[in-house]
Image 1 (tube, rainbow, N blue to C red):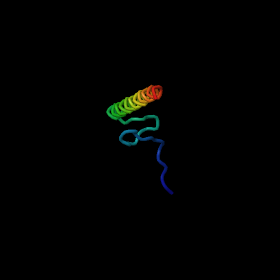
Image 2 (cartoon, rainbow, N blue to C red):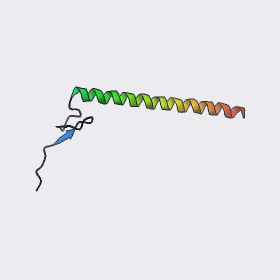
Image 3 (cartoon, rainbow, N blue to C red):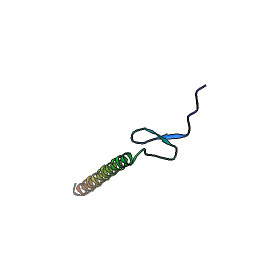
Image 4 (spheres, rainbow, N blue to C red):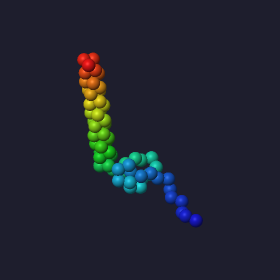
Length: 65
């Protein structure tokens, strides 16, 4: 029968084993995660802005046709 592992989790960046109550193994991994999350939010906000601008342009053009 396999041996039971103690409760643990894994670092969301590098997948290192951690105590169950932690998300990151180091400040470096936490910083890396936060930078990637910030970049993703910025990209998503830019995409939403572009969609809104295109929608406004299409709506405005449809008034003149």
